[in-house]
Amino acid sequence: MKIKLLFSLALVLTVIGKSAFGQACTPDPQYPSTSHGIHPDSATNFVQGYANQAYTQLVTIVVPQDTTPPFPPVPIPWDSTVLVSITGLPNGFTYACWNNSPAPNRCSWPGGTIGCAIITGNPTTADTGTHPLQVATQNYLGGSTTPINYTITYYKIKINGPSGIQNLDASQFMIGDPVPNPFGEKTEIDYNLPKVCQVSVKVYNMVGTEVYAYSGRGQKGVNKFFFDRNGLAPGMYVYSISNGEQVITKRMVISK
Image (cartoon, rainbow, N blue to C red):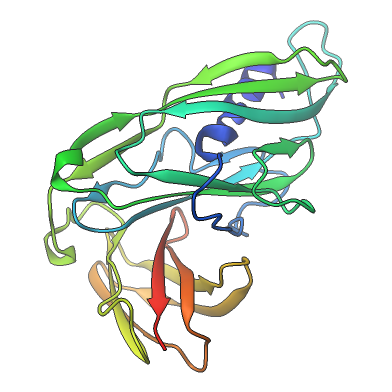
């Protein structure tokens, strides 16, 4: 793995920081320890948002144990990557990191580990437009205490005007908010698929434990998913829907 990839992997910290909510996340299991990098990558980029609809983006980080520079081609241990700052998020958006360490929500990942981060926010019509992100990171290699500084600029969040799930661009994979939310026993979640594909739905509690999983075939266009709390305790939960290429995560609340 070349130094260039090391720098791009630093992008892992694009979405890492201290969250006012302290919200945990769970890495997407479709990315094994050998898929070094950040998911979604720069080609897929972050999911678009819509005014007046809660926004969530899950990022999975797979950190290699070492990197090999062009010259000399000798592997160098990759010690860690640390977030310095992130700018450009829409107003009111926040982000939280998770690295499964004894002190979760720390904004760094050691080499050879898998972590995740989650961006959340509630955009308004004033946030409509494209928000380029700038992320300053520090990377530590080969036991050195002098960091390699790098700023990542290719991620962006686009906020569209108000729209119901029925009016979404047919080429976009999008999921709507639960209706109702909060809910007592059942809620309905609409999601749009640009093509027929296998879909997985997962629900996690606020400590990152998976409490529900479903897998099935989704049809092109708007699909409906009905979720039954099935004895789950009241509180906030995170639900994610994957189309096999992208994962979108949002929040829902079970009332008493």
